[in-house]
Image 1: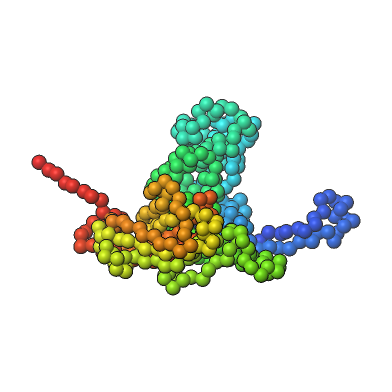
Image 2: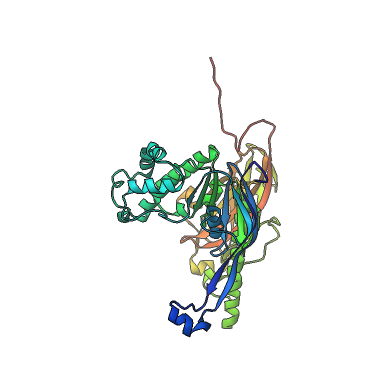
Length: 426
């Protein structure tokens, strides 16, 4: 290791795969049809480098085929790089593929022995952990049944339970948390936080960006085999989502040109993205169909004066204006909401009209909203997100980091927000 504080060091790693277009399957075909063996070398990773400190959790994000799962397989040594180097410090446990290493005709208990031994545990160590593994998996009734009788969720429970009980220094996870019921997913998250607090290094590949934001300190966005951006998960993910939105819009524009359309498709899902309006921060990111668009957003004090610096416990008003084409004829209803994020990406609060009132509201052709709340946030810089959705989940307009504001306070509180507290003594 170049740096003894690191658990993982990836240096200029490149990986290619040979893609055959018309491969011969037997010796006869290979002799008679030699020209069928056409292939190309496709580089999946073009020189990625990153390091992960001991006890740190990172996420790898990107569209399908970008190279994130290949990176994880290189870390597990299922694959090896064509160029570059990877160094790992400590026992590695991985959840790369659901049920990998399980034999379908063996029982769950027998598979615990074989799977844990793959991770380097002795039989004595496995027996010591056996009951804890079974209890966490919640498969007591089925543990002596063949795993071929297990559902995909039961596979996941057993695989996850084994992987987190082998005392690994490094845990690698690929989309595995997408399987299982909500209660078990929460249990897994809690366990991940626990083992992370004990110094385990975690690398997660997932399309569920919220999972990464809950666990990881850093996200790496991989694009075309390179790391395009890294940093605070929430900020990296916003840029990634904006990029995907831009690509979607480009495809729609190309489709319209090819079909010779002179007007915008009436389907709201295919509306084009508007330019960023003047009331937004320069770093703002906009998504949505734009069937309903925000035309102004302001932060105001209790006297309705525009303001960007607020005290803790001061009243804050969010003033929004919007425009909707043909709203009355279409009888549109919407759900307006807002979210507040600290500058480091911490999600501080979010709510919307449906949460607060239990129902959607009619959308006008030109409408206004005023949202008032008492600010309990402690001193820091914050970003405001605003959004409006349809009743069936279509995003009309979603502007991330639309405005920024600063909170100040003369008090010396510690944490994220001020809680109403009383002390009493005798």
